Length: 311
Picture 1 (cartoon, rainbow, N blue to C red):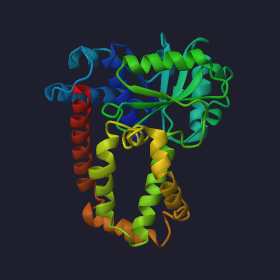
Picture 2 (cartoon, one colour):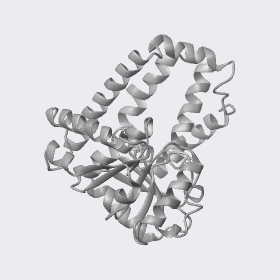
Picture 3 (tube, rainbow, N blue to C red):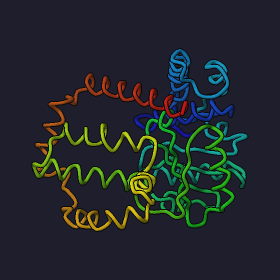
Picture 4 (cartoon, rainbow, N blue to C red):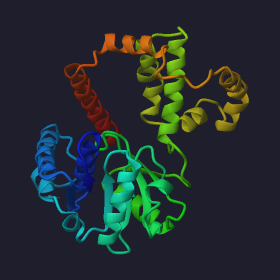
């Protein structure tokens, strides 16, 4: 695991916890001396809290899982014996390209090289790697420990066996991997999310609905179903004879609504200020309020993860 500070430090720690929960030995590397050691201290605290809440993943105890994780300030030592490398640095293309060049020089030809990137396509991330057949993106959802989806996105040269091995690994450690058949900007999750964000933004900006109520449309409406079944199954179940019947009944109405959608919003223009102010009235953007809501989010996700596991 390659780890850096900020959000991607969080992603790196989460990946370490996920892999350790599956019984794997995990080596964490950070290019900032001492950061990987600090990460293990934070991981130990989180795993003990999860154990106390009876939400610890895997068969081993928290202490047993922590014992599987070691920290390194030297990249070559961290990579020794690895069969799978998960990179978690910040979203700067040149940095990722450079790191994968360094990794390739230090590992054997069969080691899988995987990136956590959420917005860079594999053909760019791995453009400076010599053997691109072993490269792919494994994009998690934040926080990965509670939200199990992982998008597996191949480079145009990725070998099918590499996709298969990664899918097996992610399944074994308790994640929910999905395969994209080819790369596309935004992958699948962020493209669907972008569509939701854009229409939600337009509806608020056009004075149709408030910020508070559009969030309720998702959390108390669509999200209730989508936590367990996706849009395709939702449609399949919402007509007497399944998906084809649903589209015969409702397809023309969906097409009519889609043609009424406005242009892509300007999220940083003058029109955005009212939306941002409305959001900040509900939840002020200072560290104290945001941290409290993030803690609440994680607790709720933990409860939802347990509910899904039990059903």
